[in-house]
Length: 391
Figure 1 (tube, rainbow, N blue to C red):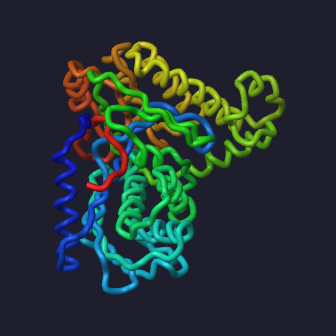
Figure 2 (cartoon, one colour):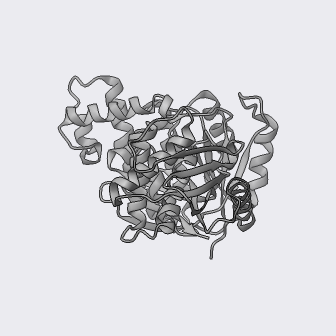
């Protein structure tokens, strides 16, 4: 049974419908929904062909879509003051200054390249995934857009994995983020009540059902992040440099023993990047095996190791993030796990917390953490959600 917040999604549908009706003068024909995600463990392993263990959350994006009188795609964004865009979906992609427009145009271009001509359509977008928080608002939008267009235009033969690949191609080629497949794949394929173990080399997936007494708390650090403008792409280049040095296709093919034995004169920074990836892949496989068994003490230790590796070897945490993790970890001990989540350079902390510890964790964070952006602490209680669907 889907435990997600149904009212939260209904509010999104209402917002998308309102923007659609105001802009186009009629009701939409179809609503598509795709969730954001939080990654429990397996950070910066996806583009290295490793394992990841994300979970779709009950925050997402709704796309309302209906037929258009012209050959253009006309889009309106509820979250941006009903800002609009209109373009020929079969013409050469032209980058826009506004990122949400590049997402729409990129999905259209990627879908057209995969399936042929895209017909004109009207669409409205509404989302509630906190932006700049590392919860994949962009992947949620991309997958929802792809799902809406495929359904509305009755395109057949595309699997959930295909939708994810189309959305990833859009981000890589048109938005400028060198992301892996994790965010889009969990948004497209997640099952309710479960995390999703993804083998990013084969794209095989396996649901990992979570104990029902665990709640995911996502705490925003107050530091917004933009992956396309951050050192994210540099980290990917460093991983590729390490793979080239060890003469392997990707770091998935590198063992920890060989990492150390064949280090030679490899640059220390590049070595530490590779060390994080190799050890994180191993941690993720172990975590998937113990999560469904409810061994929270072992999971807690794995999440602790993951955060330290991201801090010391991959260098993508920030002091505010480290402070949050230390504060929550001190209270939870082995009863739950906590770590940085997402690409880093700001964003959020994820904590797996027993239901009876939710308030005892939230209270000291609210009282003692001072977000750098000056806003009140933002804490999101999330439940494991199912993936993209027509609603």
